[in-house]
Length: 342
Image (cartoon, rainbow, N blue to C red; front, top):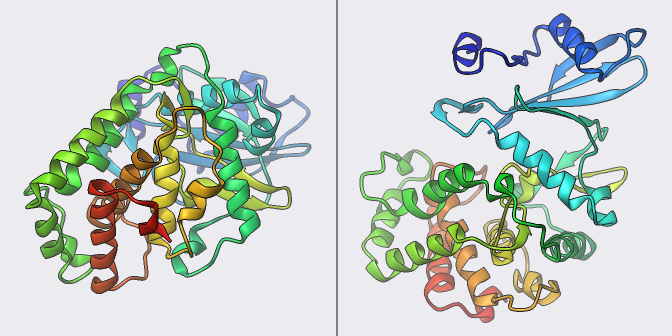
């Protein structure tokens, strides 16, 4: 992988957790550690889907290095925009104008544009919300924090910024969310996940009204907008630690419709069988012109994407449960009504 990376980015640093010496020298050269502050430990953080993330500890500080390569870390055969971590860094920079958002996001130490690498302060021991997929429940307070975060984020209307258009990542996400799941012969062996799921997918693909509605929602997703949007607001991007809620992984951020973030969150409330997902809409104080029905449409798309697309989740659901969720998703898209989310 290093040779492939160097062919594409000959002047870039290749982050390798198995080469602590190179990391130590790199941090020194970038001015991110002092000569008398040696690196004492290097380790990978989890198995990232999109990026390589490495924790580095020196004598006096703890850092996290995150690099985006021209591929998805979990699927190196799949290409991905290599500048995505630079988008994430810009998102943190712009959103830091709000004190609450600055507190919730990682603190950026530095960015190496040539290497598509961002360094942040280590947040310590944090745990994501993936336990929701195993049956855990959000507390009312946690739900309120998550919704308040979106309200603060969507209140921001930064100046037009080519980096925050994030066209390449949006096009990739559009393909995975709005196109691939309902495409005929998309190559996904859904019955390997749940026996009978392929037939459910065929049923949805035969619903031309649904296919057309999802296409229209995809056009709304790709349209230019003015609100700052996280772009991947789901339990894998939320973490909890000693300091409370933190929000990470904003490489899909863009200026667009706030309804998209709200819809993705609602979609995961449905997928994790949280009680009354409508509470997200009830508690969210969106900007003027916010369209709840559009958010519900995006929620339906997210449910379909996660059940029938390439971005599978560790859901403990049988075929009947998935079928019922797909029926709800269809209704949210075609006949959006808050009553569906009670």
